[in-house]
Image (cartoon, rainbow, N blue to C red; front, side, top):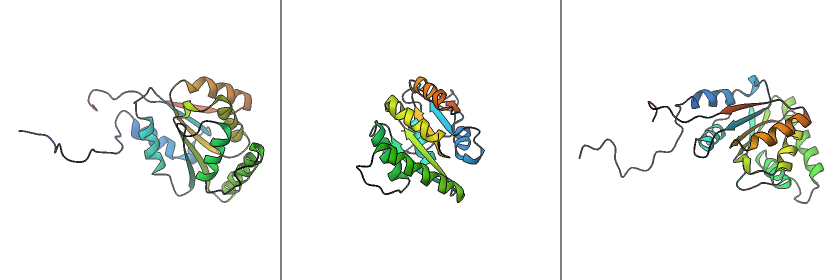
Length: 184
Protein backbone atom coordinates (compact mmCIF):
# COMPACT_ATOMS: atom_id res chain seq x y z
CA UNK A 1 0.00 0.00 0.00
CA UNK A 2 3.07 2.27 0.26
CA UNK A 3 1.79 4.08 3.36
CA UNK A 4 4.06 6.72 4.84
CA UNK A 5 2.80 6.20 8.41
CA UNK A 6 0.62 3.88 10.46
CA UNK A 7 -2.99 5.07 9.99
CA UNK A 8 -3.97 3.29 13.22
CA UNK A 9 -1.41 5.00 15.40
CA UNK A 10 -2.76 7.50 17.94
CA UNK A 11 -2.81 11.06 16.61
CA UNK A 12 0.44 12.92 17.16
CA UNK A 13 0.04 15.61 19.77
CA UNK A 14 2.64 18.13 20.50
CA UNK A 15 4.44 21.21 19.49
CA UNK A 16 5.74 21.85 15.98
CA UNK A 17 8.50 24.43 15.95
CA UNK A 18 8.13 25.58 12.34
CA UNK A 19 7.00 29.06 11.19
CA UNK A 20 9.07 30.67 13.98
CA UNK A 21 6.99 28.93 16.70
CA UNK A 22 10.15 27.73 18.49
CA UNK A 23 11.64 31.24 18.34
CA UNK A 24 8.45 32.74 19.77
CA UNK A 25 8.28 30.11 22.51
CA UNK A 26 11.90 30.77 23.50
CA UNK A 27 11.20 34.51 23.53
CA UNK A 28 8.22 34.01 25.86
CA UNK A 29 10.05 31.52 28.11
CA UNK A 30 12.87 33.95 29.00
CA UNK A 31 10.79 35.96 31.45
CA UNK A 32 13.69 37.82 33.00
CA UNK A 33 14.63 39.27 29.61
CA UNK A 34 11.19 40.70 28.80
CA UNK A 35 11.38 44.43 28.14
CA UNK A 36 7.63 44.64 28.82
CA UNK A 37 5.60 42.66 31.33
CA UNK A 38 2.62 42.04 29.03
CA UNK A 39 2.87 39.94 25.89
CA UNK A 40 0.04 39.43 23.46
CA UNK A 41 0.24 36.40 21.15
CA UNK A 42 -2.25 36.95 18.34
CA UNK A 43 -3.43 35.27 15.20
CA UNK A 44 -6.59 34.01 13.53
CA UNK A 45 -8.56 31.00 14.70
CA UNK A 46 -6.64 27.74 14.22
CA UNK A 47 -3.20 29.31 13.77
CA UNK A 48 -1.70 27.56 16.84
CA UNK A 49 -2.10 29.96 19.77
CA UNK A 50 -3.50 27.27 22.08
CA UNK A 51 -0.74 24.82 21.11
CA UNK A 52 1.83 27.49 21.99
CA UNK A 53 -0.07 28.15 25.26
CA UNK A 54 0.07 24.44 26.18
CA UNK A 55 3.76 24.17 25.32
CA UNK A 56 4.61 27.23 27.41
CA UNK A 57 2.45 25.94 30.28
CA UNK A 58 4.28 22.63 30.37
CA UNK A 59 7.79 24.07 30.14
CA UNK A 60 8.04 27.02 32.51
CA UNK A 61 11.44 27.60 34.12
CA UNK A 62 11.80 26.68 37.80
CA UNK A 63 12.12 30.37 38.67
CA UNK A 64 8.56 31.03 37.46
CA UNK A 65 5.25 30.35 39.10
CA UNK A 66 2.47 30.13 36.53
CA UNK A 67 -1.29 30.39 36.51
CA UNK A 68 -3.04 28.97 33.47
CA UNK A 69 -6.43 30.48 32.69
CA UNK A 70 -8.82 29.69 29.86
CA UNK A 71 -10.95 32.55 28.58
CA UNK A 72 -13.44 30.01 27.28
CA UNK A 73 -14.17 29.00 30.90
CA UNK A 74 -13.90 32.29 32.77
CA UNK A 75 -14.62 35.72 31.32
CA UNK A 76 -15.57 38.19 34.07
CA UNK A 77 -13.43 40.06 36.59
CA UNK A 78 -14.18 37.93 39.63
CA UNK A 79 -13.92 34.62 37.75
CA UNK A 80 -10.58 35.54 36.23
CA UNK A 81 -9.14 36.73 39.54
CA UNK A 82 -10.25 33.57 41.33
CA UNK A 83 -8.78 31.40 38.57
CA UNK A 84 -5.46 33.26 38.86
CA UNK A 85 -5.44 32.90 42.64
CA UNK A 86 -6.12 29.18 42.33
CA UNK A 87 -3.48 28.80 39.61
CA UNK A 88 -0.85 30.46 41.79
CA UNK A 89 -1.83 28.26 44.73
CA UNK A 90 -3.37 31.00 46.87
CA UNK A 91 -6.33 29.90 48.95
CA UNK A 92 -8.99 32.54 49.59
CA UNK A 93 -12.61 32.85 50.57
CA UNK A 94 -14.86 32.87 47.50
CA UNK A 95 -16.95 35.82 48.71
CA UNK A 96 -14.10 38.33 49.06
CA UNK A 97 -14.59 41.72 47.43
CA UNK A 98 -12.70 42.18 44.15
CA UNK A 99 -10.44 44.90 45.61
CA UNK A 100 -9.46 42.57 48.48
CA UNK A 101 -8.58 39.83 45.97
CA UNK A 102 -6.47 42.31 43.99
CA UNK A 103 -4.65 43.37 47.19
CA UNK A 104 -3.93 39.75 48.20
CA UNK A 105 -2.76 38.86 44.71
CA UNK A 106 -0.51 41.92 44.49
CA UNK A 107 1.02 41.11 47.87
CA UNK A 108 1.66 37.48 46.89
CA UNK A 109 3.21 38.42 43.52
CA UNK A 110 5.51 41.02 45.06
CA UNK A 111 6.58 38.71 47.89
CA UNK A 112 7.36 36.00 45.34
CA UNK A 113 9.45 38.48 43.33
CA UNK A 114 11.41 39.42 46.46
CA UNK A 115 12.27 35.71 46.87
CA UNK A 116 13.45 35.56 43.24
CA UNK A 117 10.38 33.84 41.82
CA UNK A 118 8.39 35.49 39.05
CA UNK A 119 4.64 35.06 38.76
CA UNK A 120 3.24 34.61 35.28
CA UNK A 121 -0.39 34.48 34.17
CA UNK A 122 -1.10 32.79 30.85
CA UNK A 123 -4.56 33.43 29.39
CA UNK A 124 -5.72 31.29 26.48
CA UNK A 125 -8.68 32.51 24.41
CA UNK A 126 -8.23 35.90 26.08
CA UNK A 127 -10.33 37.60 23.39
CA UNK A 128 -13.36 36.12 25.20
CA UNK A 129 -12.66 38.14 28.37
CA UNK A 130 -14.87 41.11 29.13
CA UNK A 131 -13.40 44.58 28.64
CA UNK A 132 -13.63 45.19 32.39
CA UNK A 133 -11.68 41.99 33.09
CA UNK A 134 -8.93 43.06 30.67
CA UNK A 135 -8.80 46.51 32.28
CA UNK A 136 -8.53 44.93 35.74
CA UNK A 137 -5.68 42.66 34.61
CA UNK A 138 -3.78 45.61 33.15
CA UNK A 139 -4.28 47.52 36.40
CA UNK A 140 -2.96 44.48 38.28
CA UNK A 141 0.18 44.39 36.11
CA UNK A 142 0.68 48.14 36.62
CA UNK A 143 0.46 47.77 40.40
CA UNK A 144 2.65 44.70 40.88
CA UNK A 145 5.52 42.72 39.38
CA UNK A 146 3.12 40.29 37.68
CA UNK A 147 3.86 39.20 34.10
CA UNK A 148 1.11 38.26 31.70
CA UNK A 149 0.75 36.53 28.33
CA UNK A 150 -2.54 36.85 26.46
CA UNK A 151 -3.15 34.27 23.70
CA UNK A 152 -5.95 35.81 21.65
CA UNK A 153 -7.42 36.69 18.33
CA UNK A 154 -6.61 40.20 17.16
CA UNK A 155 -9.98 41.51 18.35
CA UNK A 156 -8.37 41.90 21.80
CA UNK A 157 -5.83 44.46 20.55
CA UNK A 158 -8.17 47.42 20.94
CA UNK A 159 -9.11 46.55 24.51
CA UNK A 160 -5.48 45.88 25.48
CA UNK A 161 -4.31 49.13 23.92
CA UNK A 162 -7.00 51.20 25.64
CA UNK A 163 -6.39 49.62 29.07
CA UNK A 164 -2.60 49.78 28.68
CA UNK A 165 -2.71 53.49 27.95
CA UNK A 166 -4.99 54.14 30.91
CA UNK A 167 -2.71 52.25 33.33
CA UNK A 168 0.58 53.19 31.62
CA UNK A 169 1.53 49.58 30.91
CA UNK A 170 3.77 48.76 27.97
CA UNK A 171 2.98 45.62 26.02
CA UNK A 172 4.34 43.72 23.04
CA UNK A 173 2.55 41.72 20.36
CA UNK A 174 3.80 38.50 18.80
CA UNK A 175 1.71 37.88 15.70
CA UNK A 176 1.56 34.26 14.57
CA UNK A 177 1.48 33.60 10.85
CA UNK A 178 0.53 30.51 8.90
CA UNK A 179 3.07 27.81 8.17
CA UNK A 180 5.19 28.28 5.05
CA UNK A 181 4.92 25.67 2.30
CA UNK A 182 8.09 23.77 3.34
CA UNK A 183 6.74 23.34 6.92
CA UNK A 184 3.36 22.15 5.69
